[in-house]
Image (tube, rainbow, N blue to C red; front, side, top):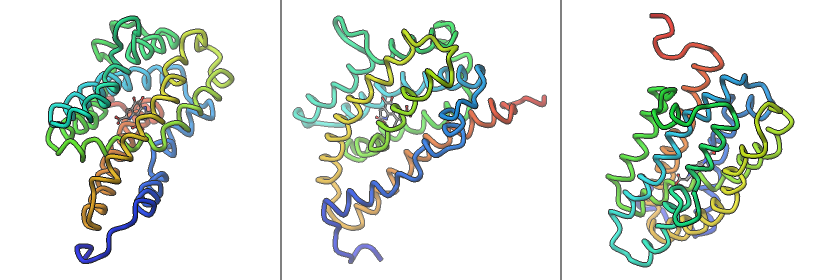
Amino acid sequence: MTADLKPWSKEEFKEKLLEKGKFYHRNHEFHIMMNNGELSKEAVQGWVANRFYYQVAIPVKDAAIMSNCWDREVRRHWIQRIIDHDGNGNDPGGIEAWLELGDAVGLERDDLWSHKHLLPGVKFAIDAYVNFAKQQPWQVAASSSLTELFAPTIHKDRIDNWPDKYPWIDQSKGYRYFSKRLTEARRDVERGLEITLDYYKTREQQEMMLNVLQFKLDVLWTMCDCMYLAYIVKKPPYHNV
Ligand code: AHQ
């Protein structure tokens, strides 16, 4: 029974979070094939189109967290995550950068905004994440973003591998999003870790947080499962009816 166990120190707790890295979707076969240059053009386009729903969901998820948070100081920081994606003033934001990635891989912007290529299972996984943020205490929802502890590496994989593995992708406009996230993810993780290491006090709460992180890892992994079935196994939903 973890209820009577001593809480982990902040360092031990952070270590436990980092141990979850093996479940990060960088280790999914879909991403391994991506980094090895083994994805077809259709599979890359499918990934860009399906991830677009994730990109436009992130600001909605972060707004849900803010709508549950009465702490002005936290909101003053957290609002930056929405701006990073929606942009403001002269900054077109990350959603625009993802649309440029869509342009670079040969997708029509209307087909991204209409979610024409969105797979049902990818939508369900992402909607589960948004609803989690709406229903959970803001600190719990905030801590679920800590899959980004492992994100800089995956963005760097794309920047390092895609130019050589996918020379058909227009490099002049395709990679701005990934470079942008390298710094933004590190800043987000700093804030997310601070909230998480402070909020979960007892061992039972800390163990619960590991399950919260596993939920979000499952969201990302499930997205890759759906895209693998559709674009690698070539058995998208209803392929046989
Ligand atoms: O581009 C990504 C992003 O903006 C975010 C926000 C953060 C969150 O709030 O959950 N997570 C996240 C992630 C982004 N990119 C993913 C990728 O593989 O490109 C990784 C993903 C994450 O690690 O949760």
